[in-house]
Image (cartoon, rainbow, N blue to C red):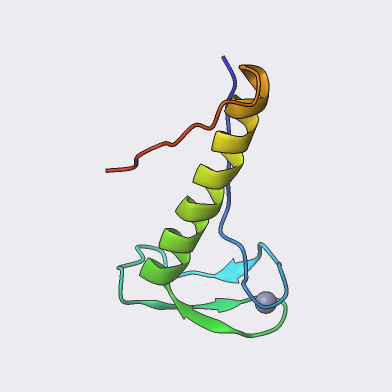
Length: 74
Ligand SMILES: [Zn+2]
């Protein structure tokens, strides 16, 4: 089985280091450790999920011969 792991990524500089509260709530603001950009935790999570979905879809499509695959996340 293939495992995919994705971390949060800064939309501005691409850094994966963030200052995150211990128990982040969706509305908490987290700060990029590199460029200082601030995003809500919820927004970053959503964006990370979207990126992950795209990557996995592409990878799966390659494996089964370029048939388009759409993954639905509930
Ligand atoms: Zn950044």
